Image (cartoon, rainbow, N blue to C red; front, side, top):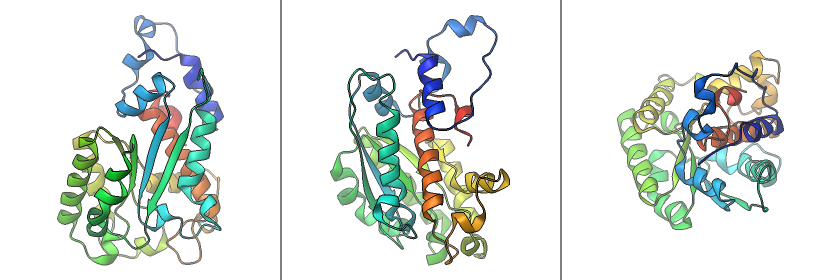
Length: 259
């Protein structure tokens, strides 16, 4: 499936991502963009290639449900739906419909999510699942090995339906930083994602970079409880999620998504 470099650049600009300097011509520049950018979300890429509608399930715990947001409309899944639907009209021959179903439930760890995966995810017949996980497991005491086992099985069950998967790691916050061994769950998630070829929205690293680049302060990202994101944090997270989806679908270069 061929992609226009101008389309990728337009999407990046629309998402507020930095533009790349144009490289000097080379033999590889004549290849179709799909050969130059790895496609890790083949179903999404196929649907976008024929202007198809996309159905997404946002699966996870309170960060997905929207704890800390001023309203459900300010939770990241709702913002992601609006953002993707707007951005993906660029280059489309007809208007696309993007549906993002919020299937987050506060307090869920890997065990609780596994128990409802069939009902809340598989039964919805999504094209893509964005799975936020690993924040509550260190708080509830789920062993890392069990977390990995359940996450691996969940990815397999989702992929068996033909849907794509993107993972989202822990938030960077005061409450998790105070839990001994909490970082092991993030490390395990990234190792599993690398093994299975699953893209990851690196929320923890992104949040640190937003602060270091002066986009917002920790207090502007995380609410008074030291755990849940604010409206401003969710807005930035939705933009990062949209960028990761576009990268996974082969529409923009990974460098453009490093916001």
